[in-house]
Length: 178
Image (cartoon, rainbow, N blue to C red; front, side, top):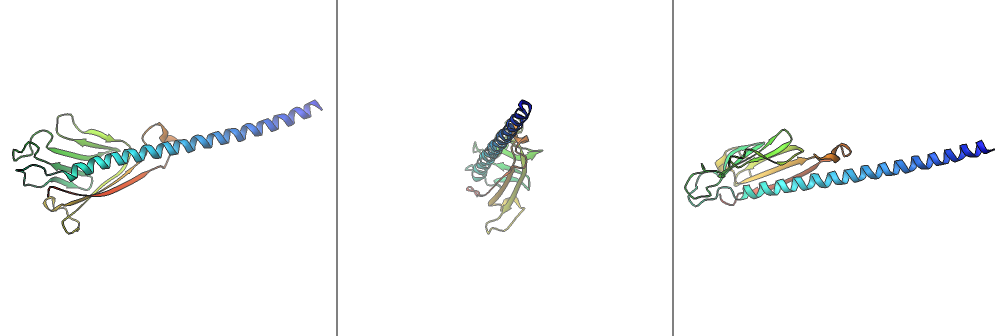
């Protein structure tokens, strides 16, 4: 009789432990997915806001009359501004390059520090260029609006538990100085 009661108690205890473990594991995964989603969204918003600000103000300078965008490629953009009003953009910091290298979105301001990482875990970085009428263009002097599409995924330790979590952010930015 004692052996029978002991087996029943072990079976009930084992079931309770299995249910507890499954509940805790589900909670951990839910937390990891939530944390990864927040990380991915914050990184994407921060990067797109910074890039949009730089595009918006490209072409500054009282004596600068050339294009505000020096290079307009689908995954790379070079912005030009005459910050010291000398009529050129050859000085440090007057040309800023944004491009995707692997899964890292990088910004190079030409200050000698090289291309600095802005965010990690970028799956897609697309740039589309439009003229005054809203028609797509590849001519840098005609660009008046830039559409940015950024798709990110978590790049930190939570990424292993949160496979497949992505964030897509997009916006259109109008150049103010052209």
